[in-house]
Length: 133
Image 1 (cartoon, rainbow, N blue to C red):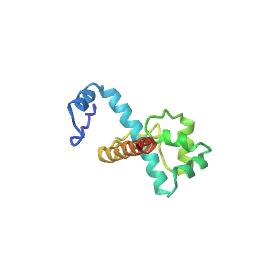
Image 2: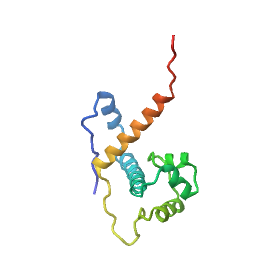
Image 3: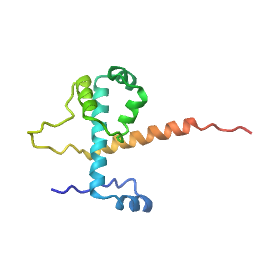
Image 4: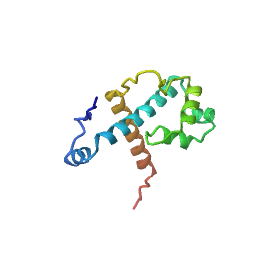
């Protein structure tokens, strides 16, 4: 079964459409799955009312590494995923004997991506110094 790309109509422009059309279905699915994994980890952290710093301490990692994990671009090892499952008491990896189920929820993923973009933009803008004349 082939998935179809989900477009976000309220954020369109000719440039975005051109970039979007240049993305293969395989790449789109790959990125969507990574973002979904990051979203599931982020939601589990929030459900426990932990900060990223607290989670990083429990994982024995630096907060900057956890931040990369939650960006959706990190390539996890299975050992790290198993450790995350133990610390957060959640299930990230599917059983090998179970049929895989689709976990991509476009609305939740869109909100997560927009929040990450907003966070990055805020960091960028706050790091710029205004020069007074």
